[in-house]
Image (cartoon, rainbow, N blue to C red; front, side):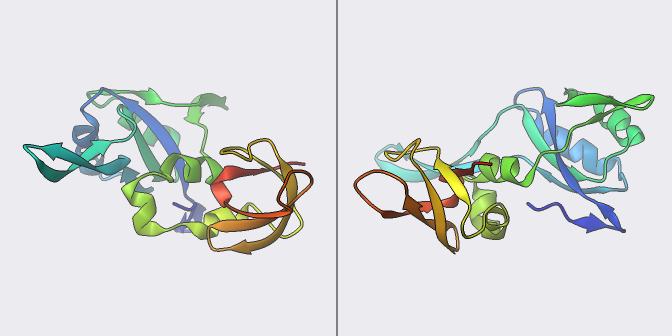
Length: 185
């Protein structure tokens, strides 16, 4: 999930908006274009346990219907060729870059939030991405859960958790998942 480099150029994640239910077809069509600079194409999925005829079965569901994520070193020609494919609507976040439009890349934090509940996240375990966003002593705010809106300082980082020294509340220190806190400047 990280922004790697391929051939000395930075790879970033971009969002592609496509027709509902056509994500796999579009993914195959992009692979068939053999574009230089496309590193990975993801359709976020989650495995759910459903009960059918009194038996538990695993069912794969698309987490964000109509959206695909492409890690690439994007250029004008690539954007144009991909957007001309059948079932493709557009890249999200297009903005004028000189005489042509390029999509905006997602940040590491955005990618972590998008993928935190997916099978891909569980397989790659990108805790280093979360830890890159925080350091001991950072002033943070809790964004989810019963401690929402409480503020404190990062006391210690452990894998995908942070131990916080809270400014107020019953507990002085709590342990919380990194994706449930946000740095305050």
